[in-house]
Image 1 (tube, rainbow, N blue to C red):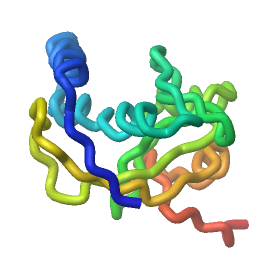
Image 2: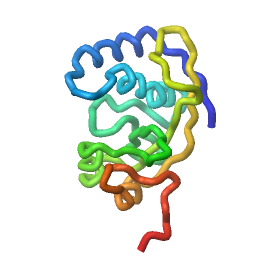
Image 3: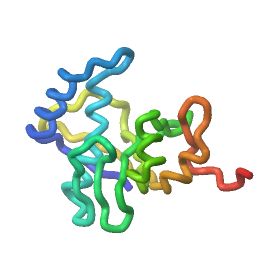
Image 4: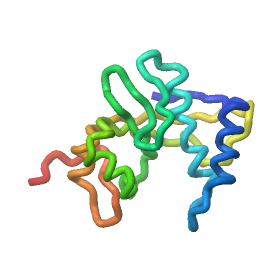
Length: 145
């Protein structure tokens, strides 16, 4: 399903703080932290979903449990070692897969951006299909023996 989100001052201020604190190499921090827009927006519009302020996962959902939002990629959806650990420890139940509708550009306050929720998968099922690049296919392949 396609959604339109207009970044708020609160979202942009939070993103900017996260960018300033992000010291990882080889990461575009704006891309990284702008990618929280779908989880932020969904927790605002979905009455069954609330934002989780920790780092273990993204939102709490009445039906889907602890959810973590992951960006779709043709190469497979990436699960960092940290997220893999959270799944293994039982902290993440569901992965919600999404993508930008247009090419990514840095988000700005008051400028709408469209994204699509393409589906969700059981986190442990996704982890069982992860490859050497820490990616799993979406949709999942259920014919694996």
